[in-house]
Amino acid sequence: MAKLIDREALVGELNKKFGDCAEVFEDNTNQSIKVKPEKLVEVMKELKENPNYELNWIKNLNAVDYPENFTMVYHLDSLTYHHKLTVKVEVEKTNPQVPSITSLWKAADVMEREAYDLMGMVFTGHPNLKRILLADDFVGHPLRKDFQLA
Amino acid sequence: MLKTQELTLNMGPVHPSTHGVYRCVLTLDGEYVRNAVNHIGYLHRGLEKLAESRTYSQFIPYTDRLDYCSGLANELAYVMAVEKLMGITEEIPERAQYLRVICAELQRLASHGIFVGSFALDTAGMTAFFYAFRERDRVLELITRIGGNRLTPNYMRIGGVARDLEEDFFKELKQLMDDYDAAIDEYDGILTGNEIFQSRTKGVSIVSKEMALDYGFTGPNLRASGVDYDMRRDEPYGIYDRFKFEVPIGETGDTFDRYVLRVKEMRESVKIIKQALEQIPEGPVMAKVPKVIKPPVGEVFHCIENPKGHLGFHIVSDGSTKPYRTRIYSPTFVMLSAFPEMAKGTHIMDAVLILASIDIVLGEVDR
Image 1: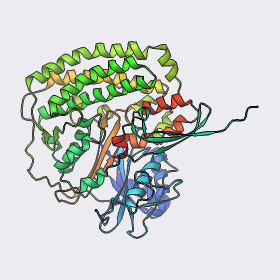
Image 2: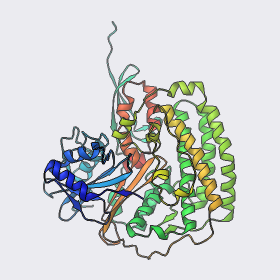
Image 3: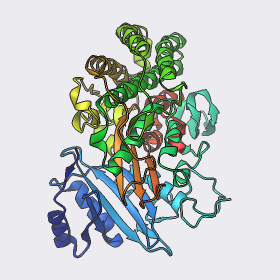
């Protein structure tokens, strides 16, 4: 089974280092933390490079359209310790913007483009933010709940 | 000094060596690839959006259409994710667990069979193609007996499998497994040990461990780059902790390693199926699950070791009969993004091989 990280200690460390930026996110998986969007890149860099966590493997990057906000979900994995962490970032509904983490993982490039294409998330600092699956002249973002089907 | 000029060449979307409807715009300087740009989406069917309007059980046949070379394994990833969300992972009957392992490993043999065959074809080795497809077809015949279709069996269910298999199936499966090692020896003889094949693939497009992790490689491609990680062994799901098998690791991370690792994995799959055939108990194949599946509010992310890499499902439930959001993490979609960097500076004929060595399948790339 997947090993869990001590989230309380982790969030304490992150908050000490970067100011008030992270908190434990309560859900059924017991492996999520919530990070403020403006500190995302710093926190991800710390999670990736700190030898205590070494969450060096990005397994999934995903946007969810909740009624109250958009949530970016990052599933991180460690090859060294085999533990997992879910990083969540809540973004406002109007003008959703998240910093891009392509500088940390090249794998994030296509997944961020996909989230932009299908969900309309704008990743600031992304080198090539274009539609990837849909045609360039497609109007709208189909995975949004308010997208009109037919 | 001769005046030269760069040439832009469109490879695909309909071209045998792109392995599906994938287009790559190559910038060529003579025979050398200077740049490559991926264009995908030709097979995009919006499966993630479709999932939102289907019940949990109704989505199982759609997963067959992801990586259509390994339908049963995709189904397994999906039903395991839903079971984890419902909290009934422990209730799956023993016999169903063994049938699932047999299915997943058969599908690995079929998928790697395609890989070996089409890889040989990309090196212009026609004979090996027929050898590899000979065994793959026997596997597909068995899969037809499992679910009625060659590629889209729709056999897994939330809580178990659709039905038990007859005695004849196991007899034939045992016969096939007894024959398989000799068949893989033939692949080795005709392809792996072939001097021309080796000089075409050895040292071509070396992917370092760091680069593999950077590009989010999973599965055989990651192991070919020297990372010793197999989910079936290191974080076993289902009953994989009961089987003894080796995890082959590549040495240099070149195209040859990515090929030879898959051939070695086929031998391990045969070992796992043989052990499963010895251990499989009698009993029911379905757990008692409600007719209407309504997972509790929450979310789950579950990955399994598919033939091509880690296939993951991130399912968000709002407590109703349909998922609020289903995200399909497909391994080849992410790994394909490394192709431009892997192909730069190589010959165009090598670029074709490098693409084949990533083992993409466009049903999964585009979803």
